[in-house]
Image (tube, rainbow, N blue to C red; front, side, top):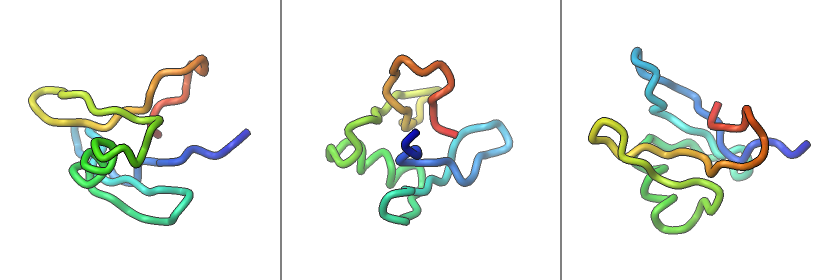
Length: 70
């Protein structure tokens, strides 16, 4: 099984994902940096949703039930 491209490294007290790590290139990103990278097309398996007024990165759905950002 291939490793996930991106993992969550920090969440807020409410559970919102705030910091991310790219497991392929070793880079770390804030939520807003990750959103910008997704919008630029650099992460094709992810998209951005507006949740409670804040752009939020989410992984694209697939056939695996428990395969969202961890």
